[in-house]
Amino acid sequence: MKDINTLKNMLNTKTLNFVLLTIATGGIYPMMWLYLNQRKMTEELKNDFIAKDYPLWLAVVTGLGWLLSDVGIAINSYDATIFDLMARILSLASGIMLIVWAFKAKTALQAYALNEFKFELKMNPFYTFIFNVYYIVYCINDMESELQKHKIIFSQQKS
Image (cartoon, rainbow, N blue to C red; front, side, top):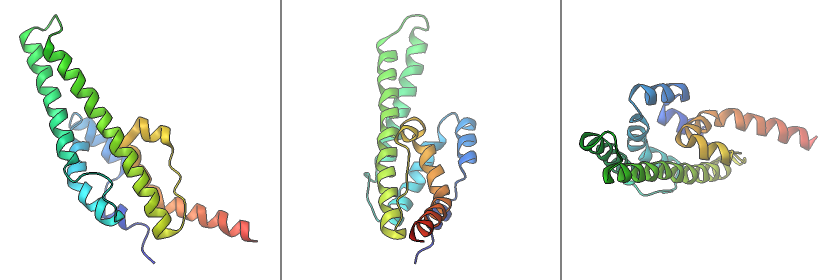
């Protein structure tokens, strides 16, 4: 049987460190993390739950939003310009892209737990929506304790 911590060890990302690095890098770290770890996740999960170049497109959309925001401020810092509007739209699009990634990763992670370790990994859809990538990292790190809970509950139901 495979080790439940294989994915956790491959990614080697503690949730608190992930949050702190996001704050320290001004929001860039999750995109870097996705770019570096997307392939590892799809290989271990044996599920191409999202396109391989998705993290790259997320970075492009986010970066263009930030660039257009700066251009809008440089042109006119008092009134909204078309650049500001486009920056808001791209910012919204990047947020939606993160949420889409999180729900697809959630589904793939649950299928992985069920197929490889024969237990249902319960993940809260509300937390997935609100915390997206952070919640996925948390759930990956917490899979071992969830498996232990499942074993305890399952052994009590048998007797």
